[in-house]
Length: 137
Image (cartoon, rainbow, N blue to C red; front, side, top):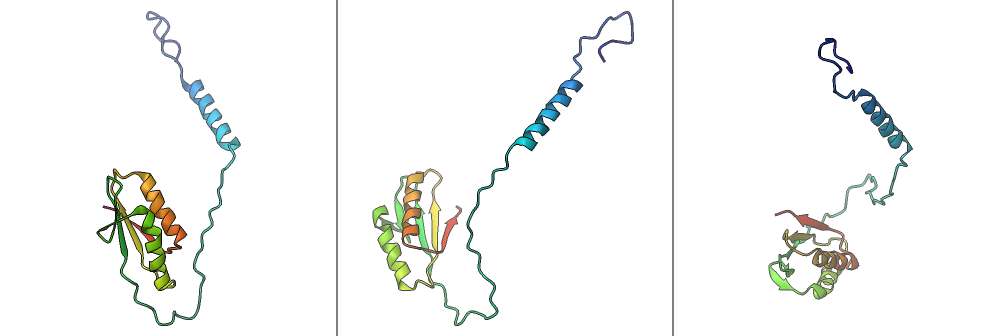
């Protein structure tokens, strides 16, 4: 209220914020309605339904444990590896049996540089590794 009911105190100094809130809500709704909806298509290769079961399921090979420590050093199954030679090793693993590839399990330290991880992921993509997972420590 802008005025007090008692005449001896005079006018109240409180601000009536109801009109301000009303205007802000109307503006919020206007911005929400007029904002264009941004949709970015993402291609996802989903498996297709099939009636026949897989023939002779193969035992999956041992996963490859790839660890990146805080200094940026890369370890392939707990042995030091060169980042530049990773793609060659990954190609060898894929060439053994392209239909039954080992899973690449990547574990990174929180302090590791993103550039090293980007090189590892680029090598895995170029080697056409299909199974890549991230291990949370």
